[in-house]
Length: 202
Image (cartoon, rainbow, N blue to C red; front, side, top):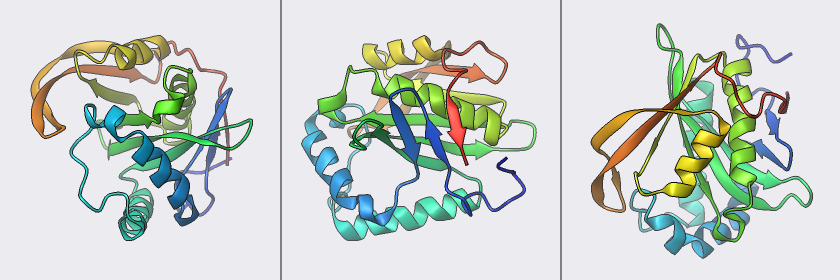
């Protein structure tokens, strides 16, 4: 069993859903990641913060990987890429960030899916699976998410896997260059979840 007292990524976790698996990004993922992000840029821009000018370059990706591994070692965030199990094709990404310990035991969920793979159920599968990682391996109590009020697919995904609406935050995040209102969601470790059967291998 993976122990929280160990250095978190001495052994890389693979989180498995029904049709996808998740693992932390590594440098050799650059070409697949940059290609999918570039192809999906127009689709993703309305849901994400502005991209830095060099965002899709190899040096920027290497910096990203170094930051990811530092954050994982320090138990601050856990980024994953999402792959289709049948052919190992990259379909998107997901992160558990802003990990809070102490009396909170919580984190924030964020995700993106490439345009060719949207509305195929891959990301709901990935979110169901990563909740098992959050509540089981990380032993968190609460996972939070925020969603633009007009992002109906994302709202549907969150509610499908067990998140509940908790409020409305004005100008909560800067998305595509503008401060925008968000719906707030959360799911707790003892809430009923759609993906309780998902498997994680360490």
